[in-house]
Each structure stands twice: as C-alpha cells, then as structure tokens.
Image (cartoon, rainbow, N blue to C red; front, side):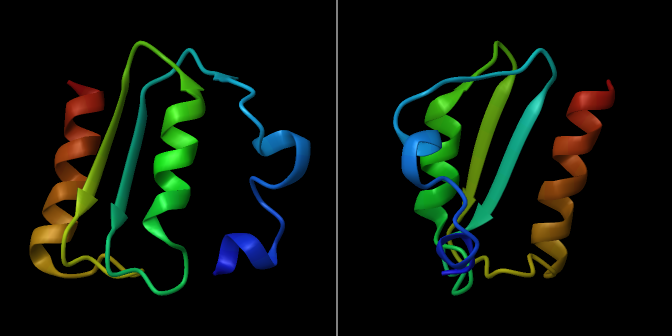
Length: 83
C-alpha cells in the first residue's frame, strides 16, 4: 500500500497519539482502493480529536473516486463544510 511505502502512520507517530484539529475534517475513502487501504483512513479517523469530523467509506469506491456518485459525495462533504 502507498501509505506503507512512504512510512506514513508508522512508528511512534502511529501509536495512539491524538491529532488535535480545530477545523472540519472529512475523510472519504473507497473500500476497493488498491493503492491505500481504507483501514488507514479508519486508523487516522480514530486518532483525530475534533468536534467536527466525519468519515465516509464508499463500498465500491476505488483510489480515484471519479464515478459521478463518488464526486457527488465529495461535493456534498464540501457543501456541508461551507454551509
């Protein structure tokens, strides 16, 4: 997986430390992603300390999230932040 190749979320930085954000956080990940496993987003989501965070796992989404319904999901997340 891509994240493993770049040593993201590994070592001490991946061991339970919280990521404190005071901004809206939206993670959208496809469960069919063959480049970065969706479990990386789940692990990241669990570490984020924010009152305004959401995660969406798209059952048939791949790495690109380029299908019309996937793009609409992304746009909806952005609209939700801006409104």
